[in-house]
Image 1 (cartoon, rainbow, N blue to C red):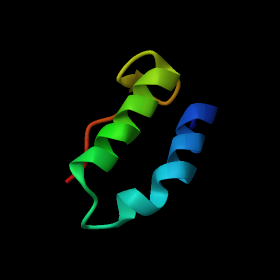
Image 2 (image 1 turned 120 degrees about the vertical axis):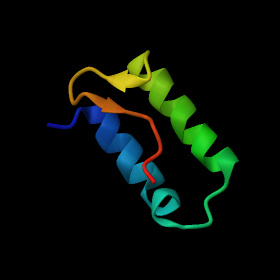
Image 3 (image 1 turned 45 degrees about the horizontal axis):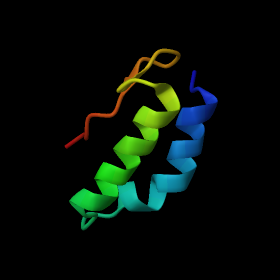
Length: 54
């Protein structure tokens, strides 16, 4: 189950995450938003982390 914050981040940053040429700055902004919304680097509701998947 996804929390509302994760859904928002997914909708907002989906095009950036799908691109192969996304920059470190774009990824950094996304992680900052994730951390700000969750007050942590892990979503407690969905147990999702902000680690970049390779």
